[in-house]
Amino acid sequence: MLKGKKIVLGITGSIAAFKACYIIRGLVKKGAEVQVVITPSGKEFITPLTLSTLTRKPVVSEFFSQRDGTWNSHVDLGLWADAMLIAPCTAATLGKMANGIADNMLITTYLSMKAPVFVAPAMDLDMYRHPSTARNMETIKSYGNIIIEPQSGFLASGLEGKGRMEEPEAIVDILDHYFDQSSKPLEGKRIMITAGPTYEKIDPVRFIGNYSSGKMGFALAEECAAKGAEVTLIAGPVALSTVNDHILRIDVESCEDMYNAAITHFASCDAAILCAAVADFRPDHIADRKIKREKDDLVLHLAPTHDIAAELGRIKKQGQVLVGFALETNDEDNNAKSKLERKKLDFIVLNSLRNEGTCFRSDENQIKIISRDGTKEYPKKKKDEVAADIVEELSVVMSN
Image (cartoon, rainbow, N blue to C red):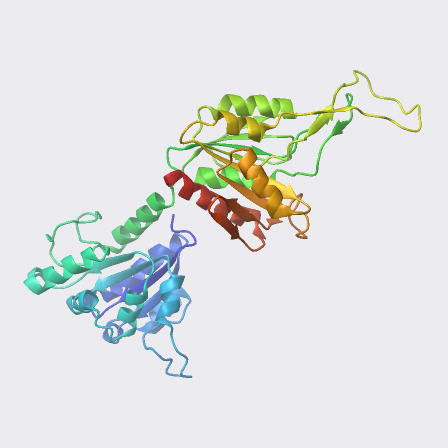
């Protein structure tokens, strides 16, 4: 699960510094982006040229670039990273981390870091067992840092060890495992999603439908499954396929079909996302033969279809989460807020046909997420990125 993760790798002045090359290779192989920050003494053991060749990024060492005076922002690095790994970490650096001695670029980056920090100590046995080192180790643990010690790749809670740095492969595996666990907030949850249009028959060859492609709903299904959920996807007639094995797909055609499937499966789900563009009306009579063009006009009498969202809101049990969608053309926010209350939704995703290049048939969308706590606005994004935003909000709601 390191693919796409941004890792700041801090390297200090240890004989084990050469092993950082293997760490970089392991992280890059798993799809991570690595930025090296090295102490001045670290450069005595391994050259920045070697490191920048492996990361394809300039190595950061000083506060200012020696060539043009450009300032290297430790604050920006702290915001950029998904994790910081200090490997190898010397006793001196441990002491500076514990006491906030910001006399080099690595420590200032550490003090600005918003992401989790992993530390792989490397020193001789006597230094490792010295009371000051033990005290510093406990201090940085109390700050929430994760200590990686040489015990077969496990995260150690005690101080036993020989002071040597854990092997690069094990360090990479630890980070991979961390993100694998933390990236599945919906593990064990069952999510139902509706997607696509419905077709309401007029006769054997004609129907009332809409332009929904199902792309948003299918992106949500893949994102929920990637986050650990078991997904039931109730899909109207669309030309899309699923990828994740944890998606159970149920194909339907009409609102009646979707309603029956939704009612059946919602009872056993922890949450439902109603993304389908369901027809509000259907012909009150379906011709059993193709209607011929015999007159200049044709009058269709329409009857309302089931309101799936309202019914699921009515039968929703304590602890179940219900998410709706609102596609509006005018007075968007007020219409969405009204729908949120009437249908007892936990939050609603609003999009508008006034946002050019979004909604039906598009690969992009631009949304607002409206709840009783307020409104969150998002820029125009690819639908898989929009799905990630929606599922992140769902994860927060389900965790409360």
